[in-house]
Figure 1 (cartoon, one colour):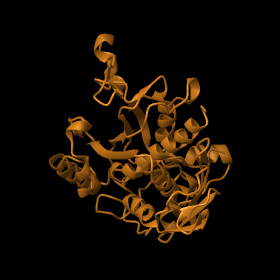
Figure 2: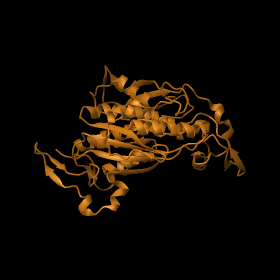
Figure 3: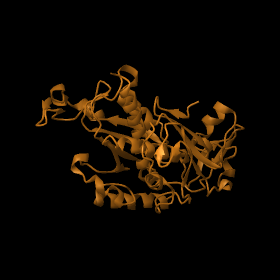
Figure 4: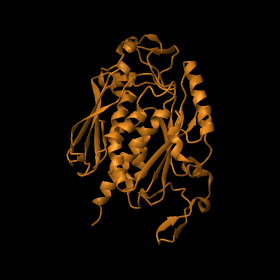
Length: 359
């Protein structure tokens, strides 16, 4: 019912924003993978709330517990169950929307679909669910690390402020040195001040997260419906607040001629096949070609703002929704590890699919 993802390396998340906790069950992870709890906690800490004044001030340690699937520091090949208990719920902050529908939220659609909804923090529709994805993605990263595959995301745009350089021109190692997670320090400072100003106005703003996958060999992916970029697109579009996905040259590719856009092949000094350009974004025919895989993810402004908004309620009456609670004025800084996690889950799944595609 929409809570599972993947074919072989498969996850199922559970829990609500203001329930006991949230968690994930991971199936298909091979046995013998080194299970590093410190790394998994590090990934969760990158996503957790309360990191700076430009993020929600909800205080959650986001510490996880392992319920199954790990023994003596290694995965056992059986289902891995992880849980993250909620600690700082303030359900009273949402009592005013028990019957009101917040604009651009899932309140109305959940009510229509299920006939009932958990209005506390959005329940299942809350972005708090993504902590479970980050935990699972961290396990996928541990598997990919054994293969030399790295997933790196960063903020490239907030509102109209953007980094105009390509990822190859940036030092991505400094992404985590600022609260915005932008590898251009000057632009990062401008972005921080802009988000902080938006926060003080009781408003919100959107942005773009770029992601680069290096070390993925040629041959990962499937033809027709299960193309690698199609699954990456589905993964990204499943993240809360995402409104767009493009890979490789993306929409800019339409401005180029075929003679400009085609990626010419050559043999390097190691007698390996490469392309001189990478407008394909590392994927051709839905299958990785060994070049860097890169894409962009667009996030809308957060729907909850600290301003009164016109709406309706469950009784069909006009209502004024008042912004309350603790919310991010811009989601992209905390979305970076979520984008990485979903990309890692896709890559881990296609690695295992590829192992069974030939002898």
